[in-house]
Image (cartoon, rainbow, N blue to C red; front, side, top):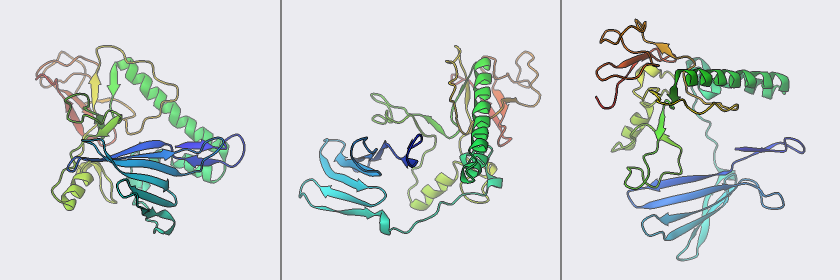
Length: 286
């Protein structure tokens, strides 16, 4: 998302990116581009794209229009063009959001709540102060990770297993992918799988979901210096050692500190600061 008119004119947000939707069952892929308005021409909220056979590369349909208005699909065989979706006459469905009291400290709505309130009140000084607090805290956490020699990984996402022969070959354009398998035989089963990843509905808590937990891996070399504009959501604010961990020699009853190298047979234990769950990390070779 980009903002125009910051220095002059009316401020306006724009979407500018690519979206890929693949269906492995029938070999089709949709490549949709959210276009940005040019400096000397074009329009806001425009889209363009194609639907093609991924196996043959044949373009079957062409997509065009505006995501905020009428979107069209054109059959490349017959040349027929028709309305795919008309957003101007669609009924708006507000998102289902859990109350702030049920959200974690790093969930974006709660994290940016004070900043958003200040923006709505047109209190730009307060909005800047709240934004700076968040950024400073993230920089401090990143610096602590760097000093400890730890590498941060998203709580709910993982790296794409792309490349030749990879299980997700062709997905290399994606930085991260959901660390869960959504492959239920029915829509109801898939809904349950999605709801088990993380709290989504009102009343859900981290304790009644079975999603993946935050992963922190030991690095053999220090990570690159933290960026000055780092803002990453979902990470723990502090690295808390497991109860009873006072850094004596490793034993089954006395786990490693996260700063220590992993040794076979001795898992690293850590308390998640958001959920209070006790996580164990073991050497993959064991």
